Length: 170
Image 1 (cartoon, one colour):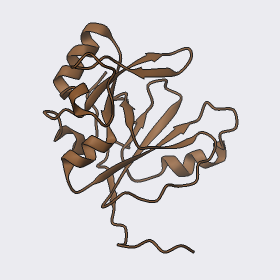
Image 2 (tube, helix red, strand yellow):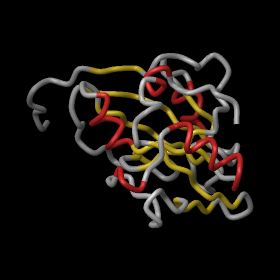
Image 3 (cartoon, rainbow, N blue to C red):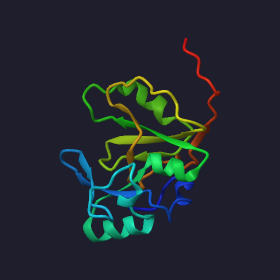
Image 4 (cartoon, rainbow, N blue to C red):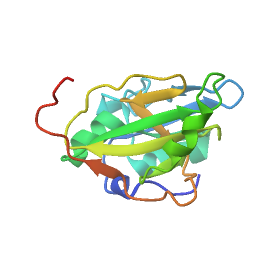
């Protein structure tokens, strides 16, 4: 793994927000590794997670893919709620015509560990309403994997949006 991560996450290297996922390339199946306390890592329980260096050491010894807990990273960072759109372009009914629009977003975009999808990073001043899901377009709220393989030209700061205090239904 190379070290291309969103600049905002480098401020969290010493916090227990990092995880490792065991990843099966053939089936695209992932599961959290065993954490510091002997249990599977949980995106809402810092006692199961690693610091960045512990995660890298684990990967170097046992293999796996780096991940970060979005809820705990957001809580630790303080003024941002991190939000990732996961594009699974390999899924049969994924709307390929929308791919270029997604990939033109002015934000950090990581290529997924499978090499067949993308993670688009955003942050908000508060948690946004859940968006409607489309096939192959997921809105991640727990763990997100980081391959360190950034889409060319998209190693940018995470795009931040200020949401109004109250969202009005249309």
